[in-house]
Amino acid sequence: MPRTKIFFYKDKDGIEPCKDWLSSLSKKTRAKGYERIRLWAEMGNELRRPYVDYLADGIYELRWRIGNINYRILYYFRGEDIVILSHGFTKEKKVPKKEIALALDRKKKG
Image (cartoon, rainbow, N blue to C red; front, side, top):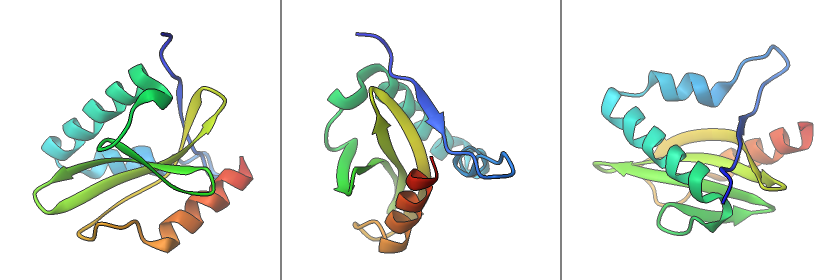
């Protein structure tokens, strides 16, 4: 199976918010995040829970946990490719609605 291509959302100034966020995480958290991203690239839309989950309106989440913090990357599929839209972390088990709304807005912008 060919590797899925992963693209990061860029804002109008060319900034990739999720890449900046990943680089700001602790070494341990960032390493686990990139480990999940590599697995994700290899498996594409065949990757399932507990690694990924469907949220709403074509938006999915890639997730990992360190301690009591849930880290998430929100994305959608563009054909076989993945486009990362948003990111964040929370102590709650659910993704905040404002994060899903941000991801949907970025998806519309392309």
